[in-house]
Length: 352
Image (tube, rainbow, N blue to C red; front, side):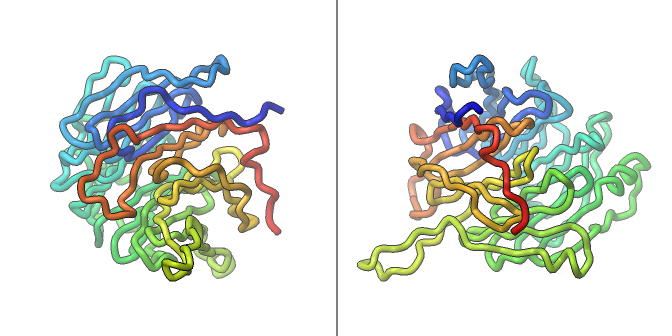
């Protein structure tokens, strides 16, 4: 069994990282979006040389708040502070505007099962795009709150908003509405209140389509299941993490950090969390236990992504706002690390 290795990407973004994502059909292609107004495409060397090469940079007019791959490793979609949702041809570099929101676009997520792109904006709407007919105007779903996180499973889309609002939409229902150009409002499949008392930072769906995990600015993670039965809902739980003991001279207690990133392992169903304390931990969702915690990184962990085969974990690191920095800059301190996991490193032990 090959031991785990970790290396730093040579040409990282110049400012804070907003998202990392691996390609759906290549475990060696990685995209990073940044507040420096660029999307970066990296190729992880397959020869075991522990390097990742910067292939191309895609310049935008404003900071890029999110990025995702489309149907293959040559297509991507970006969410911009300039209100635009764009398709990027990663081969030619051509950028096409798919829709324009009235406020910045916080998140984009692509459903390969339905060829649908969903964007979430601070104008309190979702735009639903049919990527097989990009010239068709998107459907709009009005939201009751400002969206802060978005994630898709094979059949569901989870939207986490202000005021602890969580809406779950059924993707087959959305696909039907899109194909029939229905003007009727698309209701959420479920409406929930977040298990976390403070603002949701991120959401990630289980690869087996069973549920999702959310995290908050107050050092907590919640794990929930989609099935709306008493038995299934009784399984949900939340736990504290990414906290450090404060020195006695500072009054003791806990220093609480935001949990900025969550990512489920595509093979084993365990998940990684990354926080403002500069650490990454692996968790077994079924057994409700922490499996391991990696060495501290030099700054806040802003983004995480597993490759499709679960072999790599990409970690985006940059200064956070935990110390209330007035003149923020991530220049020179933004880094991307890639960890090559050993065969069983992310494998859980199952329920207790």
